[in-house]
Image 1 (tube, helix red, strand yellow):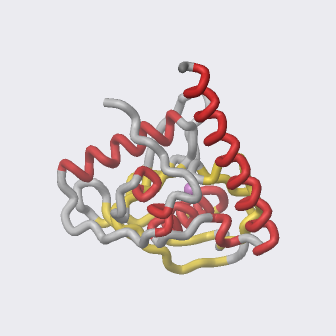
Image 2 (image 1 turned 45 degrees about the vertical axis):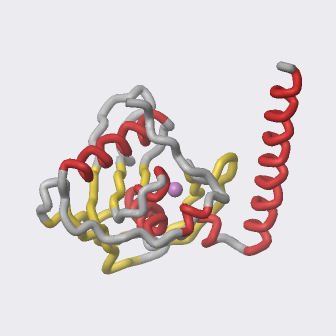
Length: 182
Ligand code: NI
């Protein structure tokens, strides 16, 4: 099967609030497997279902795997919820849905995440550092929030302007290519 496409800003589907998953069935398990594939292929350390156009509360996270493709051990969580935030950490974040941009974001340094696994069993994770950042970033996606919504308006506006210019240029290139085929 072809890899799922990752939606990119400013796709309006990234702004949706995702729905709770009632039953973990084969469809959800297949979606999770496909999301892991996309995450490792990009490569990334986390992915949320809305990024592949599905408005369901499902995330995959793996902050440990190496660039050589070793040590893959994805955490898949259904209906994840954050609690018990502690401390503060500033991390330079990027996102597969926000091309060509990174920025410092402040989040909780330690956090507890509760949800269920792909067998429908309760799953609880205590995360800190990069893993805590990643869970908070992915759960934000489920609420239609991108990391650029958590930076200063000035920085965000600069990025939005640059991104629009880039998209306009890409659109022109498509027209040019088509023209040359006449
Ligand atoms: Ni992201």
